[in-house]
Length: 133
Image (cartoon, rainbow, N blue to C red; front, top):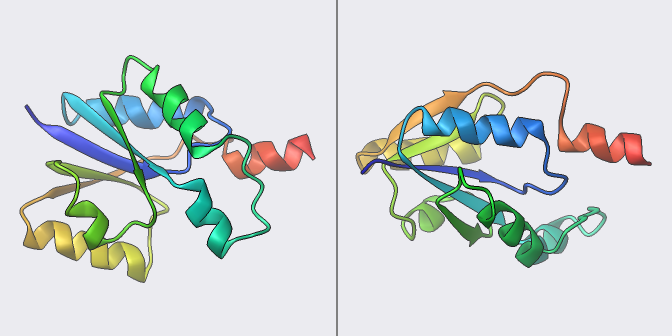
């Protein structure tokens, strides 16, 4: 069985998230979704507006038949990746920068495949938040 892992906050769940999960299932038959811990987010971004608690986001994602496992993480890092059993890391095309380079290097060094997935145009959690305000 091949396991794929994707990361995100997944607050304001929308069609782009669902399409991300569908893309993941094209590469593997077991989808692990890592949900960022709300307490960690607020520690570094106290102004962040989080609609659902970590536990509620886990419950929502766990209820989706496309999702096989949900885990909670603080930050995307090699330390976090070491704690999760996966074969492929799915990153969005916008996941760029030093933090993601470190993660990609760790994956290569540890025999993990990396796939870059397309965003759904015209929708994002930031856009939803803006429209609701």
